[in-house]
Image (tube, rainbow, N blue to C red):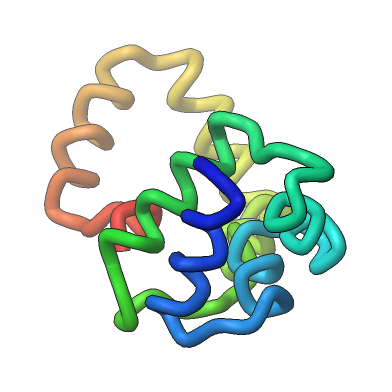
Length: 107
């Protein structure tokens, strides 16, 4: 993604460099460095910006990970992960159940 494309993305979203930085989980100075060709975004950040572009003005400038990252501190989640790793049949059932729920990464 070129510096001009990053600037255009921000313009299209109506966001400041700070808002884009928050959404990507980087410092504002990183976004500004990308826009000045001092640094270049990795493939992972280009992919995230592509998703933001697809959402257009519906995209939210919220921290990358958000509430999902807080959930990682939940002991019950780790208990479930251990059970999923130990019991293949449970994994199959959980995958089926999860199909009914939207993936937050696809918002």
